[in-house]
Image (tube, rainbow, N blue to C red; front, side, top):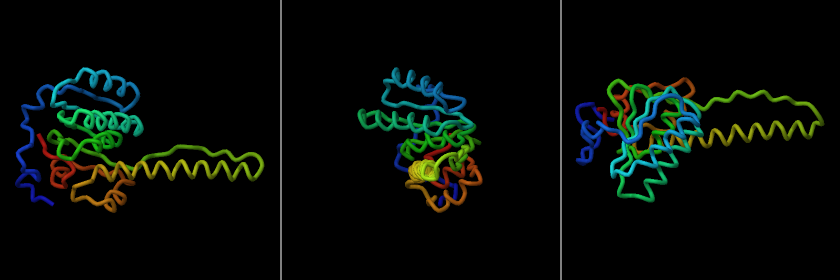
Length: 197
């Protein structure tokens, strides 16, 4: 863990603040299908070698965040000469952190005072058992499988988020159920982001 006196990354590739003056993709608000449509429209017109994606969000749909992240991953792979950089501003909660996890750690930046919030996925479901016992067992198993697969997807995102940092999965799994808030400079010291601007 860094003592906070110098950036964790010192390979000369840290972007200066001026690089963030005109983000190509600007996103704010809940992560939902409306944001996804707005994101896709902006992504389609972003042709620069450096594509800054600025986000501020209090959270939203984790599957939409994954779709946006997969678009970033895909475009990064088919145009490797381009650099996709995440800039989190003010609040990057829940689904916002999921989206950020799709960017290489070296391409993650936060503005001063920004807070990340990492938490477990939530489920609100009522299971109504009514009918032959065998169909009741099938209904219970279906919900259990949904929960198990949601946990697996959630943990894949956690693993991507902390890859290459000083945070291990045990820490994330311990802190996420109680909503883990991380201030920008702490995120830098933990190696979750490249720099604070």
